[in-house]
Length: 162
Image 1: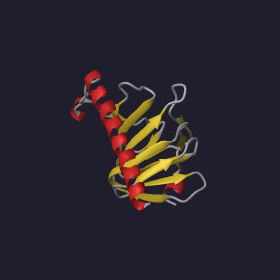
Image 2: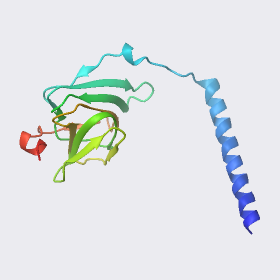
Image 3: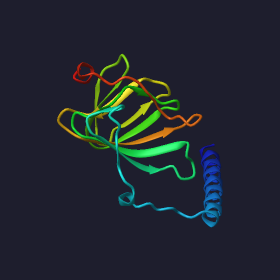
Image 4: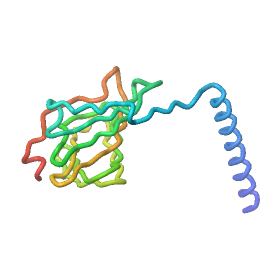
């Protein structure tokens, strides 16, 4: 029985690997890699309407899929976003420093390099740096009908220092 199960599993894996290899080989002949040097793109300073303090957005790409936005966002110490939601949620990967994030009505959480944060669709939240450290995260969001964020009121100093 064990031998039969191992054999069946091996055949399934081999078939999947071969199918994946065929798909990859097909795509290689139809497409080319696109390499964009990060230094060739300019950082955008976050709007004072949506950020407290200095925040900088480095858009990475949305080449073939303008409905998906990927960017590095760097917050200087004490900087933070306003409260906001995303219609399809937001994935954050902290790449440097220490930060803070909070869901409306919840606890303020410290986040640090290597942490991954998933904020579900339409959940009101904010994120930014700690008072003593800058923080950079990779942000991935997707659009619905051309919209990937709904900005709300700014986070107050009292909310930030909780």
